[in-house]
Amino acid sequence: MKKNPNPLHLERRGLLKALAGVAGTTLFGGLPFRAFAQTASLQPADRCFVFVYFSGGWDQLLAFDPRDPTVFTPERISETRILPGYNLINDSRFETMPLVPEKNGVRSNIAFGPAVGQLSTHFDLMTVVRGINMNTLGHEVGYRYFNTGKRPIGSAARGSSTATEIVGQFAPVVPIPSIAYNIETYNDRYPGHANALRVSRSRDLLDTLKASTDVLDPEIEQQLLGFRDQPTSCEAEAYAARGVGETYANSREQVQSVLASRLDNAFRFELAENAAVRQRYGLASSGPYDNEAGRAALIATALKKGISQCVSINLTGGLDTHFGTQLTQANNQRRGFDALATLVDDLRTTDHPSGDTFMDHTTILVFSEFSRTPLINANGGRDHHLSNSCLLMGAGVKHNYVFGASGDLGMAPGTFDLRTGAATPTGENILPEHIIATVLASANLDYSITRVEPLKPILA
Image 1 (cartoon, helix red, strand yellow):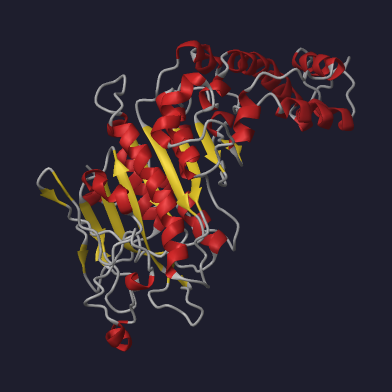
Image 2 (image 1 turned 90 degrees about the horizontal axis):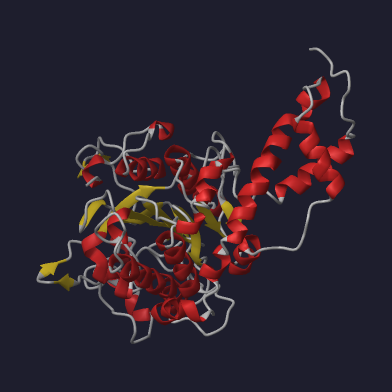
């Protein structure tokens, strides 16, 4: 390689310092400038996605795979290895039987556990998948498996997050294509525009979007811009310096444009202009808004205002209940499901600019890393269980539909003809990658990265 006869001198330490400076200007993933040029007149994405995580491993008897307690009685435990335990919740807010709602004279084909509550009234938007084999009892492994649709290597995630895959294929023209709220996110094959903006709390999002008085060290800025104009030397090639200069030059204008749009005000729910959001989601007049209702409001705002296409969010937790009463698990689930019900109410009653409602343009996946055992342990809780279930809602999937089942003996994962959904002893397990392939196929995206076929009976 021909060496640069007049190289701009920047020691390795200086380059690393410069890189740290650029990191502060590329929080939005290095999007093409055309995406930011539209921030003055934001338009929602035509297809939106929400990935809702219930952390800790949910008791699916309380959620999407209930059992009739008059059939699965304590007297039959040795025969069924299943105890619903609904009578042990001891709270009048929770039914002691599975919920089978009706709407406009139509009866739900889906039975729901007592914790689902008001969300069950949206059965006409749902597909529930039961009997998923997680092949793990580890929290991190199960969570990362569902997040990517690829079984981790050890406990290390493999592949991109599903939201990253979606944004990478769509390349949406919105300011922040993907937000990951208190949830891991990965990108193993797409350019920076597919990266999620990862935040741990609402304050992080506000701090990222608000205008700042901080400026990059002028000397470092000059070095970065100077690198862009220099012939590439071996050293520059080694450090990808030309890429650094280009990234900074582009990101500088991009971030300035976003900050000038004051997108942070959309998430400042205490402002008078956001009074309707506070009222709908039952939010206090001042923040922070980090509870379940506040997180649901954040999802709605990001999608409806055209700020994001994908939001992945840890909506509720406290589900790793090896000890204690059944009420603890039920309460923690109910908070998440109530917030999700409010979000769905909002999306299905808000018109989308392209026609119909936002719910007609949005696909929601609700999942946990695994489930709890169908038997209660000696400490009053439930332990980790392989079989799992999940919820799909909205665009691209069938409504009022159940696919798969867990067994009536210990709720073991079933085997099915995945082309039809029929149970058969010669069939296959439903795996997380089948769910992720189905989500991608629901939007006509390439799902080959999952190396499986989608669950075609689920697709609308």
